[in-house]
Image (cartoon, rainbow, N blue to C red):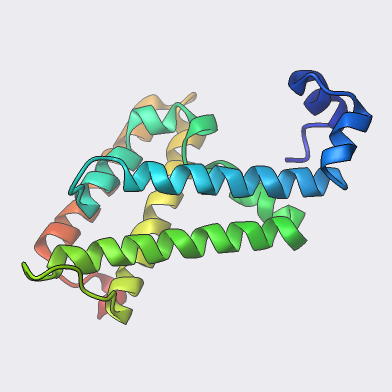
Amino acid sequence: LTGVGVADITRDAGLTHGGLYRHFASKDALVQEACTKAFDWSIPVLDGERPHATASDRVRRYLSPEHRDAPGSGCPVAALAMDAARAGGGVSEVFAQGIERNIQRFAQLLADSTADASGSAAASPQDRARAIHVLATMVGGMVLARATAAAQPALSNELMVTLQTQLTDWLEDDTPSPSDR
């Protein structure tokens, strides 16, 4: 987020500085809007992934070479979390809201996967804790996979496969994780 200047943004968008500032009060306002849009885009993509996608399906898709190799079109958290932490203020708030929405959606997916045939169940505190555990593991794994991909592709792949296996086994077996004990 700090590596891109207003001149780069305006040039790539075909705008002048004045044109940009007619739409946004500052570069920070632009960054906040861009981050909001990234979450707005990524959350419906997960929802529309495919009918009846399971939590395990989402883990496999997230921890994949395709996602790892396309940081600009994937999860904004894995791509920009450290930048958002350094930016603070409004950018941090946008990230916190996006992360909260992801936790809620994933917790609901977990609740729905254990609901009976009558329909959707409300997400429990345990569903929320599991969602936090799974999402944090996926994001951390993706960050590590991306950081190692160029120098040690085998390690990058091993990280993704190992975490995929561990998370999907845990989700499918419904066995307690260390955080549940």
